[in-house]
Every structure is written in structure tokens, then in C-alpha cells.
Image (cartoon, rainbow over all chains, first blue to last red; front, top):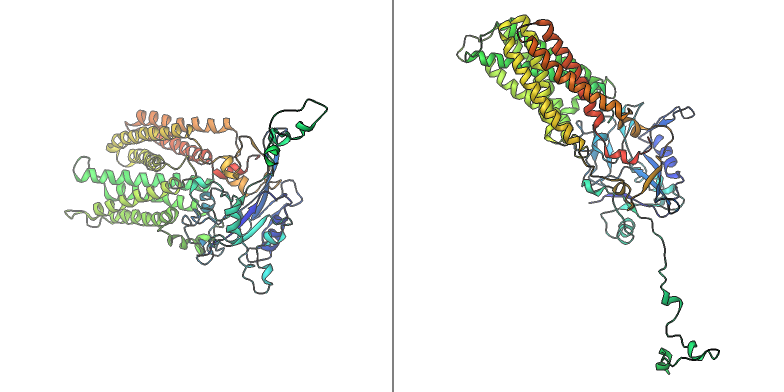
Length: 241
Length: 321
């Protein structure tokens, strides 16, 4: 069975919000649209977004680091938002595992958003139905695009390639290899929702330098340094001769 | 969570209606085995049930405003009966009209006095079926909240028990006031039962307050973003104005406000009606009506607190609200 998902590399995300704006641009003009903005230039601008980038500071000054954290629907394999829907509007597709809302069946009761521990759903205040990330299902199968562009808008727009897209059930797919080899993890695994989207952790390249790396204990030069008294110790080089 | 007044009114109003029906049918079944004096079919049983039905209709009216658009009630809400296999909300959407129909039928049988001379009056059979439906509706309403395992404050059998007892208490209090007009010899019976159920509700609601005060969250900031560090501080929520995430899941009131609502509902929904019922059990109509009014207002506060107290795990991602 196919389970399409995103894998987000927190190590290279720079928090530029390109995925946020391209998501909004594609989806507001696609089948999920329009996605309204209210008072965009007013005091309290608000609107419907499927994807947001948050920023966290980890550690205490001066040992801090900044983490940019893109957040959208995780397309859970055990999606808790689906069984609670009274009308069947909220559903998980069999063919690719994408969790979708049928906007013509949704009654806007918001119960699915209560049942999602990640707060991934957004209620559209104008259309009065629940909306959420569609994984650009109206784009990834679109034959009008060249194959290289049949990807979610957020993936295509990411300037640092922090977003990977593919089938996490195929063990040889790029996303599966990335999860397997680069420590991919799920959010709040304790709830048992089995999110399909994974995150790759921040990684730092560090070199562990030990004292003996700097000063060689059996340094042959110490035998030959005639400025000082030469050592009688046997060095490795004596054995090699 | 943000308390929605549509749901506050829905759950409290149908609770009164369900409790009132249970009270009326309790009266009829006690009379059937000669524990209580029988009452006039249309003046007491039919009228009392009609009052119960009126509260349920008002509750249904309030529920319409919980839909995205009220017009969805006509165009889309019928789909709500399709997912009864998995959704407690769907089960409630089936049970509510079904229960209302059975309550209506019960009232009609009493009003016209159909079959009241039979050995087993059809109203007793119908009333028993309706009683089962009423409890089924209580179960569905409670389970809507008790089945959400992410919201720890609700994920508990006490949630369902409280819906049954608080609905029952307000219904029996209303029945006490109603009988002061229509059947004065039943006032003491209903008032004492109302006091017993109210006291039981105080015990179980108090138990859930104690439970929720010591609840430990399962999800943490660390598991929410997957970073193992004791000190994580949110700097940006991804937007500068609010969003659905900051509106729907927060009550936006101070801790002191929440605490005062708790004491208000403990007094209005439990202590005051218990005192008024005790004073008015002799048949004082004003005191009994006041007991119901005060208790209903108290239950509005109780339901507001029930929603506001629930802390949704998504709030971990919105720390700077």
C-alpha cells in the first residue's frame, strides 16, 4: 500500500516561509481554494493556511540554537480525525494514504480538529468548512505538469531542499532511505497516531579530539632532540626498523 | 478549549429534557406498582413530557448554530447519521431525534389516553424503550468528549457519569417545580430525588475536578517537536495575528477567572439548589422554580468550565498566545 508523505529536514530548514507562501498560492487557486485572508493589512491579520513555519530557541544563552519547524498535516496512518467525523467528509484515501476533507459533505462541526493532537486542521471562516493540507493531490497526479513538477508546492519551492516527498511504505524510496539512515522521527509518537510525515533531526559535525591526538606519547623526535637529554624509551619506530 | 455557547446550551438543555422525561416516567412506573398515586394522563404525564420535549427542541435549535452555517442543518446534517460505526457524534445525531420522537410518542399516547385500560399500558412499554434511548443519548453525548484520548481532562468515565447525573438532577428539579403546579402530592418525591441526584452529581463532578487538578500531560514540548532538551522556548508561532489554532483551543481568560467560574458553578449548580429544594420540598412553587433556575444557570457555568478546562495537546505548538 502506498503512503505518500513529507520528510522535513530540520537540519537545513532556514525558516524562510517559502513553503508557506507557495502552499497558500497553489491551494488558494486550486480545488481547496479560495483560502481567505482577513484584515491582511489590519491590526490582527488572520487567514487560512495549511502549512506554517514556527521557530523555537533551544537551550539557555549563550548555548542556544534556533530551530525552524515547518508544521502541516502529518497524514497519520492511524488518523484520529477520520473516525470521529459524523458525515464521512473527513477521510483517508486508500490509494495513497492522503487524509482529505470533502468540502461538500463537511458540516463545520469542528469535531475533527478537536480529535487531532497536532492542531493540523484549519477551519475556513468564510466557507465554514474544515480544511487541511491536501499534499497537493490536485498537483502530484496532474498530467499537465512535467514529471519533475508533480510534487507538492511546498517541496518544489524549498530553496534548501529541506522537504522530501515520496512513499514511506516503499523501503527504497528517497524518503524511506532518509528516515532510515538519517534518524527520521515522528511527532508525539506516544499518541499512537503513526504520523506518515517524518522529521530529520538537527545534526552537528563534531570532532572528538583527545589529548593523545595532539601529543604523541611515543614521539620518536624525543629520542633525536639533541637539545635535551635523549630518552632511553623504546618507541614504535624502533620496532619498525 | 474555547467554550462554544451553542454546545453549552445544547448539552444543558437536552440534559434537562432527558432528566425531566426520566422523572415523569419514574412517576408513572412507581404509580403502576402503587408506590405513588397515579396522575391524570394528559394534565401530568403528557404535559410533563411536552415540557421535556420543549427543552430538547430548544437544545436542538442551539445545536444548529454549532454547524458551520445553519443552512447545513437542512442541506448536509443528514449525512451525520452515516458514520455511526465509528463516530460518537454521529451516534448522538441519531439518538437525539430518535429520543425526541419517542418522547413525543409517549406524550401523544398519554394525551389521548390510548390503551390506558389495558393490563400492561402501552405507555409503560413505550416509556421503557424511551428510557433506554434517553440513556443511550446521555452515553453518546458524554462519549463525544470521553472518547478523545488526547484531551486528558475528558478521557475518563466520569465525563459520561457527570452528563447523566447533571442532566438527571436538573430534570428532576424541574419535575419538582412542575409537580408543585400539577401534582402537589408528588412534590416531596421529586424534590428528594432531585436532591439525591444533585448530591451524587456533586460527588462525581467533584471527583473529576480532583482528578483533573492532578492530571499529568502525556505529550511534552520535547515529543511535540522531537528535540531532547529541557529548555525549549517558542519564538514564533508562524503567524503574527491569530489563527484558528489560537482561537479554537484557548479560552483566553485568566486563571483567576477560571477558578471563580469553578466556585460559581459549585454553588449555583449544587449547593444553592440543594438548599432551595430542601426548603421548598413542602410544595413552595417559588422556591422550587428558583431551585431549577439557579441550577440551570449553574450548569451553564459548569459546562463553560468543562470546555475551558480541557487543555488540548496542540497548545504545545502555540506557547506565545
